[in-house]
Amino acid sequence: MRSFLAVLAYSCICLLLVPAWADPFVSDQYHFTADFPAPPTVGTPQGSETDERGNFISTSVMIQTQVQGVYTAMVTVDNYVVPLKIDTPSLLLAMAHSFVDELNAKTTASKSGKLDGYRARFFSYDTPDHSKAGKGIVVIVPGKKPRTYLVVTMYTPLASQDEIAALDSFIASFHTK
Image (cartoon, rainbow, N blue to C red; front, top):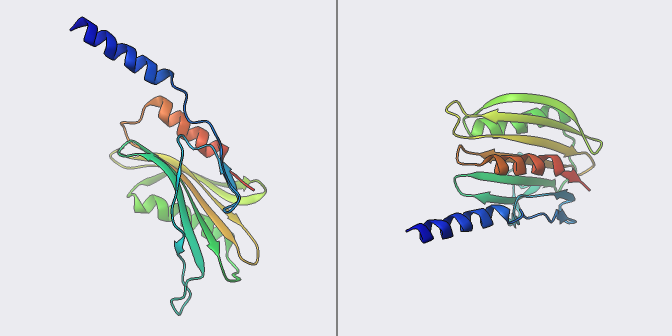
């Protein structure tokens, strides 16, 4: 029994010493870089926003890594495929609120700012029962065909302090290209 416990303890220590995935994710296609806590998966682009006739005017793709029931680090990129004039301050706030509302959470902090010279909204959230919390950034790259980024983390009480620190590093590492 002692040898089993010794092997188990040694295995746990070795797992803790394995460095986290450290290669930055660079997307030329979606124009951003970020240090995900583990290699991310890139979803299939899908139609997103529609015009008054129901035609898609943007495509959205989700790039994420997660440990089911523990944490998620995600970037959702929305590329408008038609010329569009948007109300940037309103859209930044609406996107942050929409994400938080979808989780039935409450915003714990929210401020406007800039990221890489673009207008952004930085926010954090927590659910009333503290079952989910995290941080996020919404960034809008203006232009004839604008691009939006929703960069978010979510973690549960099962997340370790190291995992939460990796999620904070992910948020801090996000940059547009």
